[in-house]
Length: 72
Image (cartoon, rainbow, N blue to C red):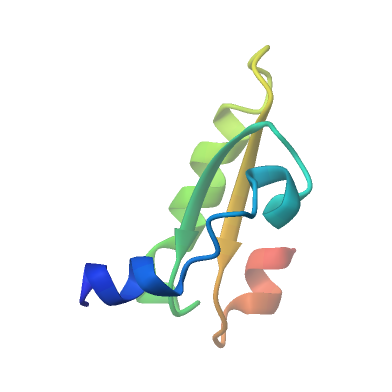
């Protein structure tokens, strides 16, 4: 991945609130939603942190055969 090309495509005028609808701290992961990628561990870790006083949003971006299972 060419980081310079990626930066050139970014709209630096957009804020976190514009992109995600919140100013909360965001922890995210992106990838192919398949079992071997381990997104279930990400969701399990998020559930362990849900009672923290800080406002944290967890975001998963991707498509794959496990999408419906992960949503549940």
